[in-house]
Image 1 (cartoon, rainbow, N blue to C red):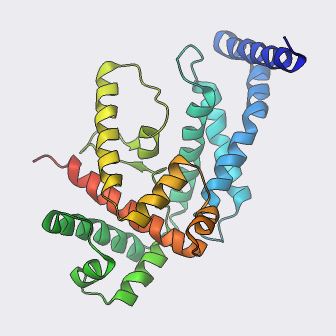
Image 2: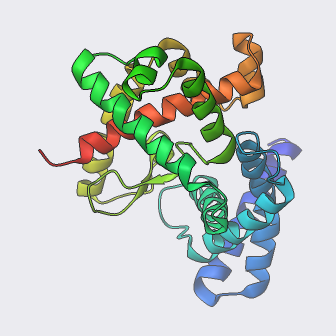
Length: 265
């Protein structure tokens, strides 16, 4: 065995020991060492989220909010379950950041209302047209000219957390679920939960497949390939703000479509 491999094995054994001490003895020293070990996850998540948030939201604030999620993840994680801690922790870190931003209530009500109107109208038109509506069709249906519609999308992009990372209640009154979790690794072992999650993944995949091409590319590059909005702009040859608009329109379409799927017939 190479020295590098030996060092990695030793590190893994040390982590297993720390998790045992936390689980069996609630050892505060072991908790602190695990938090320090996984602290870079918080910076990673905060950095990715800050690229899609208004410029007045400081990344250092996001890091402090995310740290609370990491602490909660360390305290609640069960090392015996068949899931990597990193997968479990990232969801908790994102949730903690989003909860704190929501509590600040800095998104204007008018912007929230406009976002809901676009979600609903997009779904209505898709049912009618059997395809994703164009910007012009959406603008007409909302009694807006195209410039007003683009301005509204920009306002939503600049002032709200419109992302698959958010917690959307898409099961008509049941527990909320983070849509991004349906793309990646799963923490659930219960067969019924796994079935529901598989159905949700299928619904989400179908909804993404029906997005306009450029919106589909943005969703794929951002959520599957983990590119930043700036990097996606370089790939597509457009500005970061244009990518942000495409991302916002895609998520509004997806949210409206999934909410529609959740309403009992």
